[in-house]
Length: 309
Ligand SMILES: C[S@@+](CC[C@H](N)C(=O)[O-])C[C@H]1O[C@@H](n2cnc3c(N)ncnc32)[C@H](O)[C@@H]1O
Image 1 (spheres, rainbow, N blue to C red):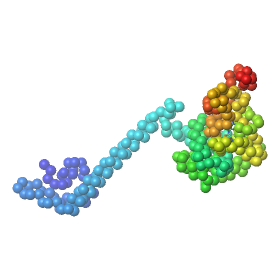
Image 2: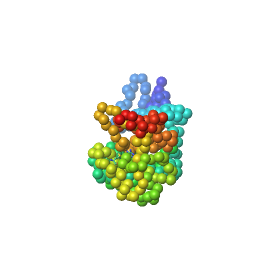
Image 3: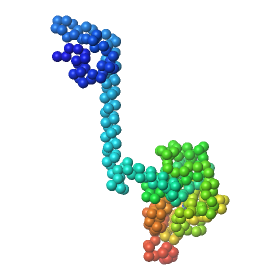
């Protein structure tokens, strides 16, 4: 039979609680002698006891939480990545980080020119922030990512605020964010401004060049804005080789557009760099609703479109 408070505590395996109680076990002995009523416990002792119980409970729940966290970590470690079943998520994260770091020193360079956001509505600015998130997401997944630069992005701009609001971890993105323009950073001869209104089609992606996408969203279609911007900068322009590899597809609305969102153009460039094939890149990423399809490889687009008319 337990005779004292210390006996009880030790039997319960909670002797550590005695320190918390600060009870002097020599003086606060509770006697259990037959025929004698137990001495009433003072308020002070009760308060200490409740305090002690609360602290024990808190410790217990903290231990439980830690156990759960360790279990979750173990599960994440052993979870396999869908793309690379041989790697754990943690390993994949490290590889991605290494690839992006490498790209920032040796990768193909691509700027998103964010100097034209003043002409955009709040809704367009929000959509652009989302497109930048997707563009970065694609770069993260790429085997050979680009060195990305968000140029002309001022910290006091609507777009910057929107990127912070909408894009989790935006400030940790592994890309360059600068208030400078692409021409403050690179010589005009190296710059190729991609615009749907260029005369020349892009043939290849060259490591000596810097590619620029216009940070624009076309809700209220502002024609030739990126083309005018390229003219103003006096840099070379190029369009995606849609006319060279695709043909118009009949659709009910007779809608045909060669204007894509920045992240869609970027996906096409990534796949082209990976495969060296415009057919593959356009097939994979050109949005279906735009009214074009990739022409059969053995039938050049010009012939196909002529036979369709
Ligand atoms: C939504 S578009 C902007 C279209 C806008 N009307 C303009 O003035 O270019 C956003 C950006 O994606 C790129 N882009 C879109 N479609 C393209 C295409 N067919 N060829 C080359 N670049 C394209 C351009 O850099 C363009 O500035």
